[in-house]
Length: 537
Image (cartoon, rainbow, N blue to C red; front, side):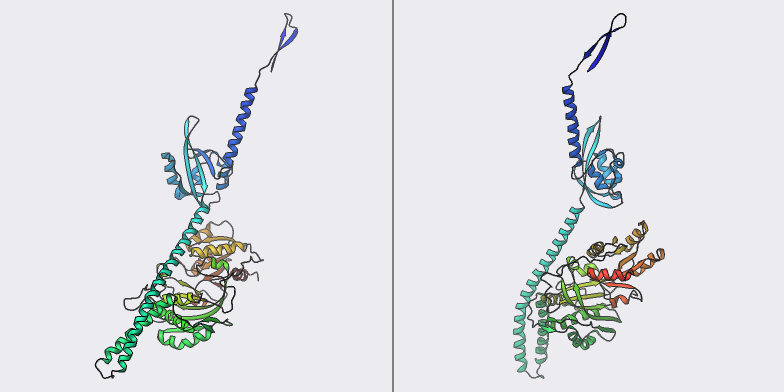
């Protein structure tokens, strides 16, 4: 409403003229516009991802979701070059899509304000804005999806491997069973014929050769039946140490004089229930393989110990269940194996030996004997670093193994230090990192020594402890520790390995005062060892 005064000729105020304008429609329109903008802003910020409007990369507007994903505040994002939100490895591809006006979803790697890279799904549209064309783009963090896909792929691979081994086992078992019956006939007729032929008869030598060949063939089919878990066994309660000791004399003859056989029995072992002849075959096969892996002189070490495995460790090891086990470990300092060889190790007829020097059934029969008794095997090997076979046999009377397992409880005592963790096996790296974080530690995780060195240089704060695998590519754990200690003399070190402590001692790691933890370890083992290493006990 407006007011206008009016005056007479003498300029005296005579009155006021008022003018009123009905602005109901305008107010209604303004309210509607504000409501629309509020609704748009609410939808904009409620998006399940980050949204940005940019002009050739420069951010003109964005929602709260982009701030949450990237770690930058809203005010920091406005006017920023959006390519700074993209990891360097993906920037060229993203810029190419911006220039071409690409409007299909695609994947890239983003980078957060703290430098962390993460997988990202991007989808953009070209829209008119103030007389020119700009792009609106959605950022979607797909870390969880990628993790789920990786887990699915891992489970699928395990399923395929299990199905393959089961199929091969059924085939091998069926063939071996029928062939064994025919060999029984051959051996029976040959034996009866030999009884009727004198040793001086021209046919005696030929018949004796047939008998020996048939017997060797019967031994091979026995190995196939063991792999297929169809071999007849007579399990009984036995002492593992006593069973191994009865085989030592024969094993020493088997491996020869150039190779030392070292026997290190564990104390206070519980009994196991198993056919002792299966232990004999396991020892014989593994010692023969160890002998063949050693060029010239060397060592084979047989050890026993008690082992308690928890859910955290079993979660990342296929076909294992928590519980109390007796461990039988056979180690050598031979040529070792690469990962490709390890992936086929227990398949029937797979061998790395020259033609005529191996059937490829020895390790398959070991696998069959162990799994037939509800045990499992782990193998640790690196080219040039020897091999350790760890066979876990369920302790007799253990009711937890295979039923419910032990409950994984979070230890009451927490740590607060920063640990640099180095492990080249992804599953072990992830599991150990999870354990350390649950114990309260800050973890810098590296898959290679080179990555560990980079993290140590880039980390702004102090690193209290290096926890590293001993045998790794690029450099071993001791060399890595030496390099880092030269720059940080107060750094504590904890070495870990799947090889036994006696094998690791050959690498010069287990000197006096050096801290070592042997895989597999439980969370309680880790907590105790960290307390000792960090001088808290």
